[in-house]
Length: 213
Image (cartoon, rainbow, N blue to C red; front, top):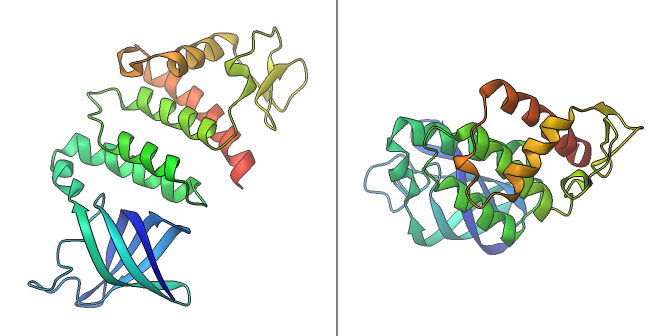
């Protein structure tokens, strides 16, 4: 069966002397691709299936593995990952997709592409929080506390509301910080310590895991 889809390459590794195994995000969610002779210099796919590259792919499905037939309109975003800080940021975004996303959505594809091409400017911790919030919203899982002004201290994971009953104890000042990051037009300008960001990310990760496990 042949399928045409736009893909974002997330990861690649060698498979023998000449072939490449690729994980990509596209129609169907996370796709496993076998690129035969992808490491052979001069081959038409040489250098194409590098992490972070975006392309339109024509592929054939063989069981759980897809084989590329043709590519076009390749965006070589791997080039902007040559800066070490950008590489670490782009690798984190790719890792988030592989760990979290189980289905394809054009809006999510555009969201991940936008974050992938951002320059982190030493604000990776704030951008990670905003990405997770945007992901929850586009997935129809927007936490209710983002628009809620309750006085409770517990978070209900099923809908993200705050009340006196819930599975997770929360700190009101952390909720205020999350709301500030969510509403900011330029969240990277918000000052946030590494320790606070870790506590916020842990809470958001629990929300995401509850709905994606």
